[in-house]
Length: 519
Image 1 (cartoon, rainbow, N blue to C red):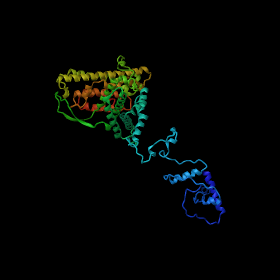
Image 2: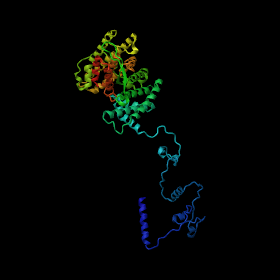
Image 3: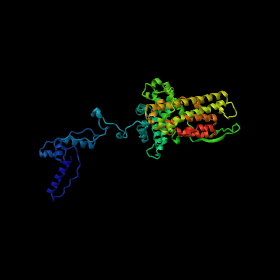
Image 4: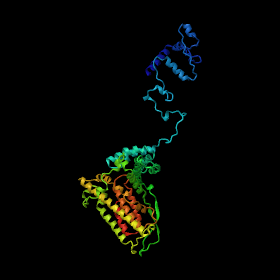
């Protein structure tokens, strides 16, 4: 078309050259009409529209044919012009673009049906109300971060890594509360990563309040679903448990999510064996809710075991080496091949047995002197009766036995790692830690022991000893190298150390030295 336009322009210039000196002609004003005969239109002269033969055609003796009169009055001027051009054009013309609303879908093949998008729909067309609002860029950032980073760093186990990257997102998108929990986990990972790498002020970080809103909405839906657990939704609820546990672990690294320091009354023994008046001391509030969450996830596995072991999450509940596997492995004190591992693992291998022995020695001394007034060991107010005290002491003894068993399991894992590989490193150990389920210890200790740790009326020797045992449990979590655990429990151990130290008991202070070496 560009070439045709250039030829017409040259022709016009030649005509102007031939008529040099001629006066410029002006057309008389007239009223345009689109109802003239075809002959006049071709000659581009005005037609007087006289029927059946117009005046111009009559004088020239040419045939005169008029277009049919359109009965529809709704045809616009632009449409009339277009139809006239099409009737006169010897070549097929390209129709101007019309919207899907103007074009009949019946004229298009099924595979070429136009896509109806919000941007092309007229404003007067009624639309269903939007429940999601505008596109949330923060949500896109969270889901992108989860897929690019979080899902790939949840485990070192290849098969379980695929579950986190493929199965869990697929389950989550089919549940509103799981979607919220998944976005919250990606967000808390983003926050902790920025904090660890000194990128707190990076502009693309999602606001913590926005992340917590996802967490709260997901948690609310999760709590509503748990009472109705069945084989039909067991997979969904267990997925929610996994997402919540990881979020709670990671939240311990964020200062804004940890409660501020709280005033508590501490009972200090005097030199004559009596108890001094309660004096207020300040300590960091300890976190215990996650313990119940771990136990709840374990109960889901237990109750829905036939369903989960045959589900897409079977890799998350099947562990090759359970507790029974590690019991008969003999202990060897020589772990020299661990020199390629981190100093943290080496320190645990060489000090775990001594730490357990110290805790047991302190308990033996307390049990022997419980009825003696020479050593000021006073139970909390809720344990004033002898039977209650005996039960509480039994709970401590059981917790210490479980701690001993888990420590032995970790030592066995280190020994097996050395045996399997000539030169063992942290990655080999971490895979074996996961297979040994060393993080499952909260499901092993009793509910009564956990309950005794929560909301004490006062901090005395009995309570401080329970916290000391708990600090040794927390040490286990510091051995697992994963983003949602790195830096989470070191702070909790420090809180326990601060609280125990306010009691002023030298023996407990000595017992807390070893966990503090891992902080």
